[in-house]
Image 1 (cartoon, rainbow, N blue to C red):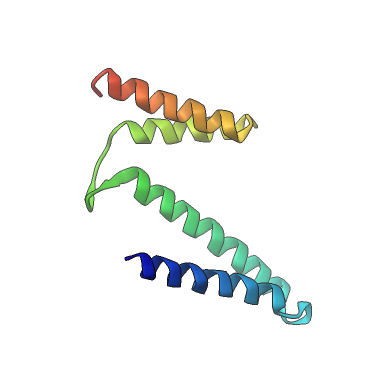
Image 2: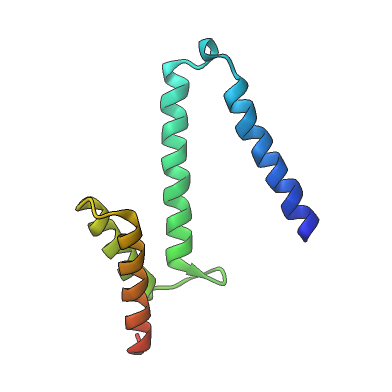
Length: 99
């Protein structure tokens, strides 16, 4: 398992490094737009999966409320560390209350 993580990390790093080595003339505005959209889509999918699933099943619990709170705080331009603390505190409080 450890070897797999190390190899995967090296592969990801090599792709990141390769991105810096590509000459600017090959990076068209269409490629830039595409890469920005793919990044947002992948992050949204990751947030959705981590928020709404547990053990491969669809679950609705306090994580949804914590993510909603985080979204509202981010929209209000609250510093990121406070967003994380507030969302974690809300999830912990609701779980302590038995939700």
